[in-house]
Length: 387
Image (cartoon, rainbow, N blue to C red; front, top):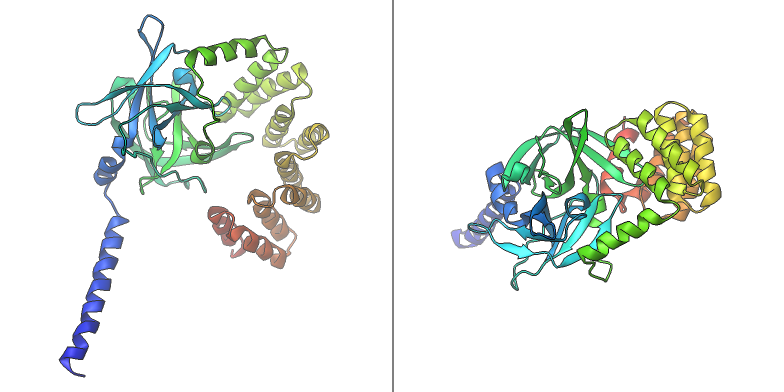
């Protein structure tokens, strides 16, 4: 072959090798490189009272242009608030109001106005939570030390019905870290740090990012005065006592204290027997205690109140599964899948239940359905099938 014919092929090969090298290096940023890239999207959040005195400080991050996520408890008692970015020596912007509020998830979506063309939005990894042992890092404002970085690993993942996945981590956090983004080693947000205190100790927790991605502006900018007024109205409702017990039960679930959580949830259903989500939580805590028959009765009560509850059917299937009644579990999971064919949880549950009764082909069929819906769950189910 002549040299002039060989040269274009060699050049093409060199270009491809070069592109591959660039791609590989981009996927393996060092921790300092990751921090430099994502830190401009993290802010400190300061809440003030009517006398302009700071009452709470926390952290937040841009989820979309001019939209910042933080914990609701950071700003819920504020008369007004502001955020401070890390540009140069720092720039301060007033919070215009709240675009959305998620009380049970302890999340608030704040609206601010930045100069045009400054898109700071972070990538949200909402498909599946990180794995146990995975390296993660946090950027936040512990004890008003703005922009502090800490790293560690994911030590546990827990599921809380109605809330989602809770990530426990070894990365140290302190007061002021509430609302901080939890990053994986690709610079994607995998969770939002929330300070939970038990026995005088901070437990390092984050709410998985799936709930963050679902936080969307509801069309009306809520002022801090309106937020406070809404809270006062909520406290006057007949169900207010049930709400109090329910939210305290969720706090106990965050910390993995199922016995304490059960007491709160049972009080919640006693105060308001028509509260579906509280019955689901009672069932979940009963499963954790190994009382599967009690759990089944609680889920059935939830379904009497709300016959189309996908979560109740999935959790009912779990109770049957742990009780060893795999055919009944399959029936419940099928009903969940029928009600919500575009979500992956029921297909994943079905796959595991089919494996328990030895129906390998049916489990594979569920994995095929799952493949296009949820990559993370598909890979987990496939690993179980291949064992």
